[in-house]
Image (cartoon, rainbow, N blue to C red; front, side, top):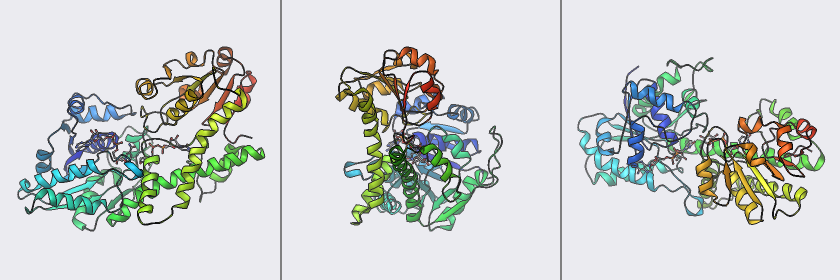
Length: 455
Ligand SMILES: NC(=O)c1ccc[n+]([C@@H]2O[C@H](COP(=O)([O-])OP(=O)(O)OC[C@H]3O[C@@H](n4cnc5c(N)ncnc54)[C@H](O)[C@@H]3O)[C@@H](O)[C@H]2O)c1
Ligand SMILES: O=c1ccn([C@@H]2O[C@H](COP(=O)(O)OP(=O)(O)O[C@H]3O[C@H](CO)[C@@H](O)[C@H](O)[C@H]3O)[C@@H](O)[C@H]2O)c(=O)[nH]1
């Protein structure tokens, strides 16, 4: 394997995980961020996010001197063979992706490229999730930054499919690697970069190693950019679909967990992403579905399915409130415990976490909201100051008239129903927003169970 010099701009989830994993594979990586404090703490091996396994991979790469952190983008452009753009692309007004971070990085790359001298063309890899056509936009900005000087580079799309909570695993053992480019030289450089993953030839403590070889797919730029949006939109659609089925299950007295199991065994459907409940959140699905709808609007196309996917997801959150109101009637003066606050387990990310919307709605209806989360206590109470946040789930449940399972952390799944029943106030309602509790054993202890689509 040839050891490549790799630069990564942006040390968020994607940038840091990608950089650390490429260093683990044997490449020499320099990570760039505008946030000086972050760069300094990362250089000391302090990882600012909760992501299983990441601290170990970053620490290992630092010890082997295969990774470094800097704020100096121009020096990085001059030195590396491949440069990833992995900065945030948050939703702007009207739902479209805000490309201002990508744009400023592209201009700065252009301004620094001329100083590379005789080095081979720089492969600029867009890993941020960006609208179709952004590859050409990045090329245009690089040229603008270069101000007429002769610069040599390729722009490649390489969408990222990692999930938070299993980001390191997903990066080392991906289902596929997608590259969008018209240049053979650029796609070969990317194949070389990822060779240890494609061939699964790197050292790992993950046992058993799940796959033999990883598909490496090369498409045109626009298709690669579209693959990212289509993948997230499809997954969000799958969840909204099962949530719609769950609503009908509630009406007819069927159990959606049995239905999901029964349909998921059909290999054309597949069993994953069929967990019904309060719906999808996080830093990606809401943003990316909304960006794809916005792209469709630009072309005056009505995205009927995607519109419905979002409408169903919005309805799931309202169902939490109506399930509480059905049993508690007025929520004024009622104490409600929210169990789990992050948008999913094994992350401290609170971006677009359903818990925040639920807490704000319950507060506006006069309920006293107490939140529990094993990791994201600080960010949660900052986001919703009216919510008291505690680190002991039983403290949250003490005196609560109702509890809502918002995030299926193990700490929440494994609560002792007997102890919970002893602490709660009548009617001791448990709204299982993730369908992870066993209704019979919960009810056996005197709790009132309400799931999503469980009859
Ligand atoms: N988080 C995920 O799970 C995930 C997965 C796949 C794809 N993505 C996509 O990857 C991109 C990055 O997402 P993220 O969650 O890692 O973002 P993030 O918000 O966690 O991190 C972005 C980082 O970029 C830095 N940054 C911003 N502007 C910069 C600039 N001009 N120069 C240098 N650094 C700059 C910020 O300081 C921050 O450290 C987004 O487009 C996102 O949609 C995210
Ligand atoms: O059956 C399911 C599966 C997930 N969810 C919810 O869906 C959201 C997203 O979950 P997940 O996809 O596991 O997390 P992310 O880390 O947001 O990852 C998604 O978004 C990333 C950013 O684009 C992509 O890279 C990943 O492939 C894609 O799975 C969360 O709120 C989950 O609770 C459900 O409600 N039911």
